Amino acid sequence: MKTLDSKLSRIRAGKYKSKDFIIADAKDGDMGFGRTAPGPHRQEKRLKTKTEYLASMLDITRSGMVDIMLMSASSAEALGSKTFSKSKVTSAVRLNDTTDIWSQRGATYKDFPSQPYRSARLEQVRKISDLGLYSVTYSNNVDHDIKSLEAYAAFREAALKLKFRHFLEVFNPAMDIGLKGAPLSEYVNDCIVRTLAGVMSAEYPLFLKMPYNGAAAMEELASYDPTKLIVGILGGGKGTTRDTFELATQAERHGARVALFGRKINFAEAPVELVRLMRASVEGQITATDAVKSYHDYLVKHKIKADRSLAEDLEITDPVLKA
Image (cartoon, rainbow, N blue to C red; front, side):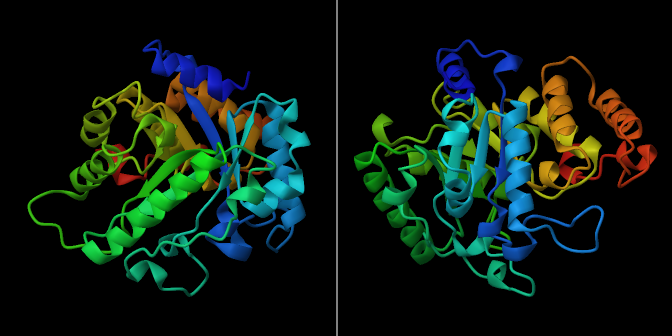
């Protein structure tokens, strides 16, 4: 059994323990950022290639430190289903690419409400994976939001016919959406519950992927229906190593059961070691502070140049984590 399935089974049975926390490596950045997604090469002044991007996916998968490897459809095809057939890691594919994730250099798409769009074809992706991510971003604009929700309903219908499982990603809108009398975190929580209230079990997402909007917002949503509406967090920007460990541990403490980190893993000096320590910190084996120190000890031991000094890397820089 894949670790994802066994962990979800225990969560749904109300038997969750910190060892059941689910970690995903989100290497689907090419569907948003394009050419810059693989990140900078550490020894040469250039961007990494697709081949190097795929190699990093293989490294993390073979380590067994994650439960899910999230990829673009083209990456999943390149790695092939055999990569995951005997692995405990579950392959997953980003199944839509709404306009608010379009992050090409110089682009201004995020200045406008999200428009639904799907480039991956379910019937083709289903040949290599049975799990995918579907993304929706609410804009407080009835015309745009109806389009997004109608597209999500059509996706669920198609996925059901193909026996395709999915998890739902909900971003905070990148633009001012003109809310009145409520913070954005409450609006997003209400949108999620309202959307899924009309969805029955056969089409229900396995879990959520969303920004960590603070302890109160996480507790509010995670406590609503904890054995069915399973909440996961996304990683956002790279931040410091302390930010990475703090985000995972804080979110788990307040009800999150999944972490799906992209740039935080991909841009790390030692990705596999980072994930190992992230898991250890979530499970309470080590504090977030000591995990940063241990990470830097590893870099020194393996003669890997750190991006920051230890003192800088121990800083919490994300405002929501400081709060």
